[in-house]
Length: 302
Image 1 (tube, one colour):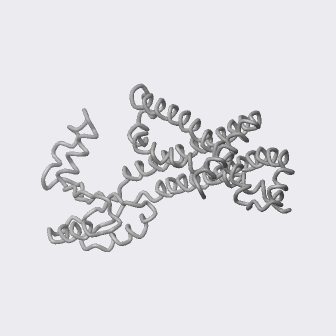
Image 2 (spheres, rainbow, N blue to C red):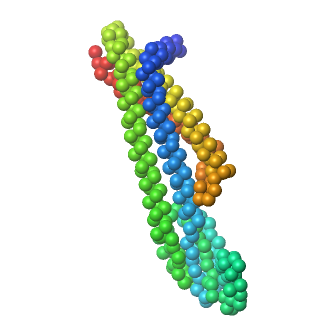
Image 3 (tube, rainbow, N blue to C red):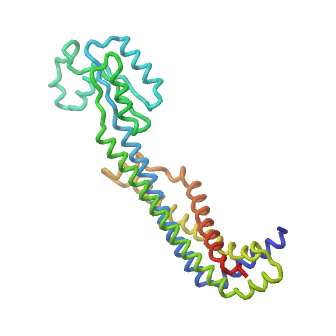
């Protein structure tokens, strides 16, 4: 296609957008509203997954060693954990470290444990293991139980199940909302384009009779749909970005208690804005272009 033809078709699409101003503004408003809900939903799902991953990282599999476990047993387990694909990171806690840790937890009552140092120490040595994926908790636990010198393995299975369920619920709920909003946006844009096409149906018929291709006729309306999608995406990005940055700054600087803890796992805006912007524009173009193309099919059959 020549540049002059493309320029003409783009100009026609812009004229359609301006000429059908009321419906175009209404379409932008509805599509932007849908995209804002999509952005909020996507941001929520992203941060819930981050929060679940953070909580999962705080819950450890604890491999308790037998009293008579040898140094060779400990070194062998250490080597196995280093080469285990499921293991994110781990640390060895000796009997002495376990006692010191327990005394630290007891604070002013730590003196109650005085006298348990050395040979009187009842606490076992252990390995504290964090996994990359909580769904691998049970097979990893069974594997660790088979190591020589291991007494038993403590696994937070119940909590892991809750975290995995929460992650799945947010993912599928977000996906369902995305599909519903996509369909709503498609209906709105299709109706907007259909009104414009209906008003110009005779012109379209004449163009068909004189040899204009379907692509040439369809392009101005697709341009109109893309304009609606682009403007909606820009408005959405400004609203969602502003809200996200405000919320992030509030949580990280002013919130207290449990809300303040969310700052440890909330995804920084600087790391997601390029994907967010591209996603909004792509989603807007998909809705606009596809909605326009679908709304014209019956009028191209002459």
